[in-house]
Image: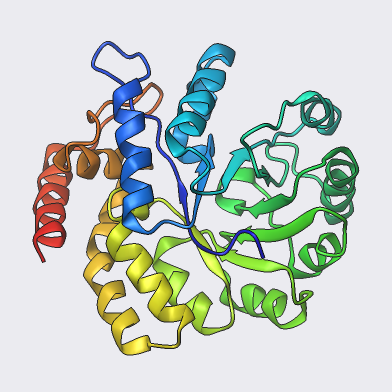
Amino acid sequence: MQFKGTGVALVTPFSQNGKVDVEGLRKLVRLQISGGTDFLVVQGTTAETATLNTFEKKEVLKIIIEENKGKLPIVLGMGGNNTAAIVEEIKSFNSEGVDGFLSVSPYYNKPSQEGIYQHFKQLSKASSLPIIAYNVPGRTGSNMTASTTLRIAELDNIVAIKEASGNMEQVMEIIQHAPQDFAVLSGDDALTLPIIALGGHGVISVVANAFPERFSQMLNASLNNDFDAARKAHYSLLDVTHQFFAEGNPAGVKVALQVRGICENVLRLPLTTVSKTLEDQIILETKKIVNQ
């Protein structure tokens, strides 16, 4: 399993003028390396990828690869709802510095389970890199069932699932029946500990952007069956986890990153910064966690 432990869905820092904050991005990568993160996920939803133009996407990836210096595996978001277009993008992609793809189940089209399977089958054939499939019904409009996930787990190059359905019975069915070398990764920060306890293998986290030290401590303790330590770290992050998602992601986590001196609290429309009340709560909770 190349992708296990704490994966972090990196935000894209922006300056006050709205441009990509290069130094903030470098600081963020350095924080992850020093904080115990196991792999980096670039240009997922948390990166506000939908608002990046083609040049910015290339620039962001280049900067992360440069700053990472090969220390951590890098997973690049490569998904969409046009199968043929994603296949061509994968085939033409220069994969130097990238270790795998994260590919979301097709959104908006609301395909059948057979359509979802055939989509990933085509991506599997096209890719020379391992692929993490991503199930997030709240964003895609359709759920990839456990039986469909188990079908795609048998495809070449599909090595893991980021499961963000919130359905623990579905997660358990996947863990119970998946191939031994297939990783089940939590797509919900708050459910990471219970999913690991059930036999999961890691997470792709938003919260760990701001608190990689505490989050990786929780994850590693869980994987080592030290659930006393894991629960302590889990509950120390639970309030801020709820706060981060209360008014949309990554609006919450960017407040904490500003407190930690990593980047400005700037987002691109249609996302906006959180309310003053929530911002004050996140600031207090961030300072509490950092100083513990």
